[in-house]
Amino acid sequence: MSGTSVLAGPAKLYIGGEWAEASGGERRDIVDPATGTKIADVPEGTTADADAAIAAAKAAFPEWSAKSGRERSRILNRVAQLMGERLEAFAQAETQDVGKPILFTRMIDIPTAIEQFEYFAALAQTLDGSVRETPLPALSLVRREPLGVVAAITPFNFPMILAASKLAPALAAGNTIVHKPAEDTPLSAFLLAEVLADAGVPSGVYNLVTGPGAELGDHIVAHPDVAAIAFTGSTTVGKRIASVAGASLKPAMTELGGNGANIVFADADLDAAVTTVINAFVYNTGQFCMSGTRLLVERPIHDTLVGILAGAVPHVPLGSPSDPGTVIGPLVSERQRTRVQRLVDQAVADGGTVVAGGAPLDLDGGYYYPPTIITGVPNDSEAVQEEIFGPVLTVQAFDTEAEAIELANSTRYGLAAGVQTADAAKALRVTKALKAGVQWVNGWAMLDPSVPFGGYKDSGLGRESGPEALLNYTRSKSVTISVPPAS
Ligand code: NAD
Image (cartoon, protein in one colour):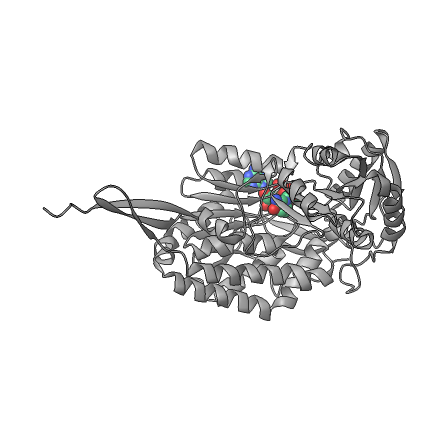
């Protein structure tokens, strides 16, 4: 039996200010991960639709980029306000589509997306040129220009936060957008298109094309009228996008995978560390690029901490994401659940011991997987080295600060890391040595739109949030004006 979609009517592409069916007439079923049943269908866009969206964005660019920062700021603030007024519809869409607990879509996903629009609305007013004095008999004017049409390609796990963290700075800087959300979780993007239109974003400035990643994505990235790519997703796809974009020298900002190390020293506040460790690996059912999936524990507290964690995680409320008490919802798909189980099995085959969870849950036909803790996993196990993207924690003991740093830095990723300790000097030393772009001391995933966010190594290139993100969507142009000395 089919569930009910939160969308008011049939979803359509949004191109040049018009709602349209996909040119090929195809539609894709969207499934509720909590029940495995169809809740909606959406247009399966084609490369012809992508071409139309890019043409609309190109046509809208001169007018949008010519607006003052103040005008763009007003419109982005209105976007934030309208999202706030429709928060419940957005939250329900993310919950139905991704299986995220409604507790978090109401409290985190949609409010965070709104904050992105508010923050970059403010920064839109600060984007101006500067004048540099030089030793030359001349003054240099350094202008900041938007790039043009930006392709925003977003993943399944945080549809609105990751769309907003691209759209808000790109629009603030005067760019126009073609947005391609993940195939399986596009519902909230249709609501966003409505809000952008209602907020006064002119026709063609934002265009929405849903459809298959490989065909549409490759076509959009290679298109000569696309000036830049803002991508969040897997490392495999990110590298492909960077290479396609590199062939025509266009910037590609890539926010990619991660497998964060959470280092707990013996001097840490144990109660606080337990909460932090659990939140860091179960949040969003572990489908979180910043997941703290590798626990590194100083040996004297290893057994105590593992014992407390193994006793605690079965009590974290798991179940229907629409229940306001639920903390852990389902994984997004059966495919994802199969992958998680394969990596758990691999950890065990490599010598690990499962002390909590370890097998899928049969609940309501959904793709549920319980919080899983595996101790004694060797560092070269795929479960340690690769991104699991499920609620799975591998535990490794260390004896020295140097060993903790070496283990933390030993994978190909470098996005998030945490250090739990009562010793401030140690925290500063260790965070300096960690090769991860986003780190926390005595906490996890404390994020703000003003703080830059992004990875080292295979976790990607570029930064979202903060003034750094705004500058990503601009290029400088310098004009040096001769000022001959008085004769
Ligand atoms: P994915 O790479 O499969 O897909 C991401 C997007 O890329 C989707 O819209 C997809 O349709 C599109 N796509 C697929 N092939 C493409 C191609 N050849 N060209 C252009 N676009 C293409 O990722 P996913 O499974 O949706 O998301 C999970 C991944 O995203 C994880 O690896 C996670 O770590 C990462 N992620 C990173 C961050 C971060 O900020 N670093 C945040 C969230 C998620």
